Length: 268
Length: 326
Image (tube, rainbow over all chains, first blue to last red; front, side, top):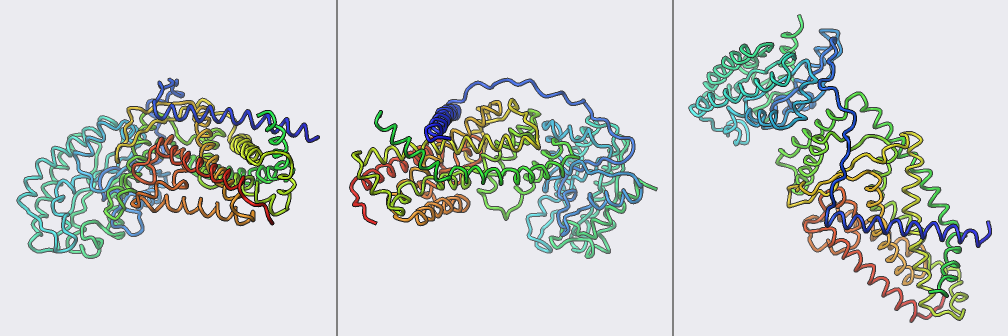
């Protein structure tokens, strides 16, 4: 190519590029400082309202508080992943965890608000045929968690029984909402335990926990197609082996026991 | 202006004949397939889950990270903003990462604004003047009956032309090459922009969708502006420093220092007056919180323009006054 041709090609192309980029720059600045009207888009191919849930296999959506998230498990598995592995082994069917939507520190009222307002949250639930739920621990023990760990936590048991009623009505709302969104899926609720059983003056907190579990069972029974997995006995005599160092959440072994029980309740 | 044109032609051809631009194209042709391949692997490994579940999981993970006490506050702000943006995409049923050539180009441009594009600009800019000194041709050039400022002006304009060429080439090549793997569709896919940051909250009242092609055009325009700042600074350094190597190293050091600062200096407020911290203009388009509180698009544009203006003035003053000795 002769020099003249190179100059013409390079010169013209780069001049055109400059003009184009300047236009882009001008548009960007204008758009950022004085946003223009939104261009309307046709939404992409509409999703099937409820994606077909395969008859075979388990499709799990887990939601709730730090227990479902797996806080305290050094391996990060929590009971959800361990249960999925055990379930696959025991049933021989395919198990898929679609979502684990648990958020540490979540209370029942926050969860029911989320279920009501967040469409995507509800949409994820419709995909499941097995819903794992743990909620209520923060409603009941929240005030006790301000302490940094063992012993330092001061728990007011009278307050706990006051919280009980309020917490249970929240729980009822959560479960009702879950059933509204997905009536067909099996719902598994992880019962509460008393993380302070080994502190003598707090041992009677177990009474509040048992009251909670009994009422929770009543609620689950009314709404149907649900299982309550008891956990409180795991954290009594053997609490030291099953609780993590934060003295509130289970450790890997503790979650493993919960997962075993969960699977026992689903598969013979 | 008319007698500048032959000078610009001369400069353009000089850069072209030095094969600098070939090298840039070659680097792009090698690197883009690498990134494309990485992206493709990522898309494959997560194909089994649908994107809504993935997005929702991402939101949940961020929210969990937010509840930790050990995470610095500015990091939390960033996460909060991301959560709100992802939620917005989810609510409007738009997949922000659907793999196609246009989305890839958008991501690639976004990631290349801080280091990659400046580096390629330096390949051309850093020896515009110092290169002529190293080879001694500066004397030949200046003994011609042309005023010195015209010589430098022609160099600056040539530089601008090449900067434009580099930005456009990067975009075009990444579209063409990634399209081989992802397909060439996606031009009209909506992208949301206009997230306004008010402290740690996102004001989404101004959020609007633009088609992806327009987004890339805006992005390229902003990249061009920050690349021009780098180019003009490099021109100044090239006038001031005699060796090309020294001039490249100086500029690279400044730019890399800027990206490091942007990552760690959120509490050193006056760092926002440095040019390198302001290079990432596309952040404003995307709605990512700026590295230092109080930075806005007009602010960054002003800072970059000021640095450019100063370096132009210095270049011209020094170049016209300087004694040319080897």
